[in-house]
Length: 380
Image (cartoon, rainbow, N blue to C red; front, side, top):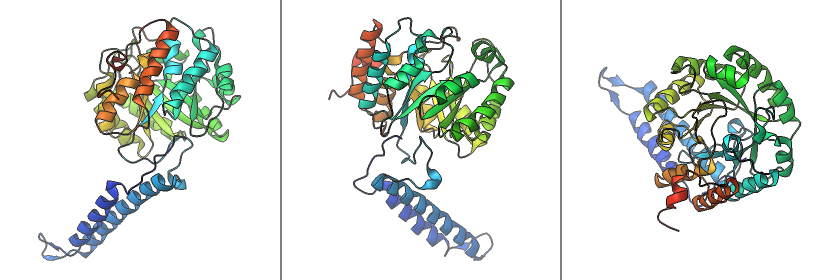
């Protein structure tokens, strides 16, 4: 699990909650001007609403102070977070490397993950359990997992596309399984050799198996904002897949802009529609920076309430089966934007910039991250 930040002083929302309770309690003494009579029921409900806010705020404070989340809000890899916290899921070691021409050694991958964790990242994709002939960069999945063993406050994620991949993943000790379904028939057929319906039916069978094996599960809906083969993807299609994914018991639903075509407006609309359909299920977003909208889309997602964001160190990556799908949104660039906006990620930006430079050396090229070129500001 991701390390929980300890508050030395009560967060601001503790006092805001107290204020809300006091204000709402005063409303109970008001008179309904439309009816000219006391408003005892409304006042009672408002007071109870205020108390609920107070209790939730206190619960969040306790999580921060004593590092113990209440059972009802714990997931194997997620935590109750103050509203200004954003969790970064580092995908550079999987989605980042799988589309790079240069292949790096297993030991170099392990060193990459060690550097990422040292920078403060608590969730990271480390392997894809797919056929090595199709994605040769991921051929050493089991060796990578073995070389990067379990660590406290770290959750390692393995991606699977089918039952064979799940069996391989469960034979290792990765903490999380990421299942994938394409939002379009064209992409899903190319990427997974199956129709959307067939893949979704398989996921509905596989997620409970992963949960029964003690792993947490995410379902990622790829090409959620547009498909390289079918073009525009209807919001309703994504919402339907999200609803079915949430019904499997998966602890998280992820929306993937696999080819980097989304705009901030698209993100706002999709996030609101999906959240309205899946209720309390946590939502995660995955963006590519193909058209230079990646960071703006992250900001739109966070503004819409998303608190888990994928990013790739240096901006590496893409999708082997999505034409012109260039790198993921760079972790460094995402961190800079979020930190400057006042969000907390628990990740050291300077350390991630250094890691991006190191990875570029391993791949033999300069990586596209803007922060990798310009550096942090103000310089630390």
